[in-house]
Length: 218
Image 1 (cartoon, rainbow, N blue to C red):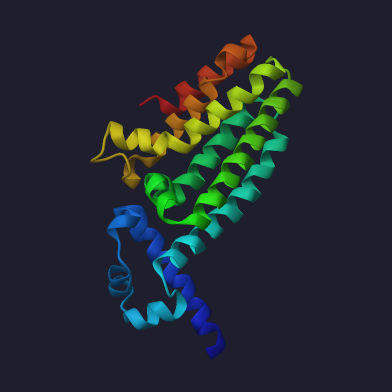
Image 2: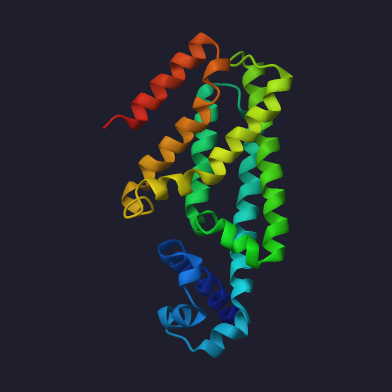
């Protein structure tokens, strides 16, 4: 039983660190703040994570593992409702690790490992979105030329990646508050899929508009 304690402490450190990073932004949270929030000594924190970058990298590894699992669902998308659910789940995962996206440029400029890994994340997202487009085409929901599919996938990934930044700039005081998160994520999913609107078949386009209205109407 005692052998499990260090592992549990390490997990608790990550849980509290993620909460603090999400609430205040990674640059505004020091290891001293983290240890104080946990009620442990800085030495105990350093025993598990000798540097702040190790905390960031460990949290990113958790995010990346969850993302890889989620992106597999892209192969099962055939209809607009499938795509809506897929993108909403992606936004929920991004929200769970929102500090990565809130402080993305700053984090990448300071952490070479994160810089390299995030490039892989973008590539994986783009491949998944292309799979979504192919699946929607197989389901007769979308008609898009292959030459348009790649730039469309890139545009959709850009919105996915920077949507929370847009929401923050739009309303800095409230955008990242948990109470308004649900609506912000739904708006993001609607805008990502909205990019496809010109390529959707009439019935699929109508269904998308109905979904957006249903979920976003006050």
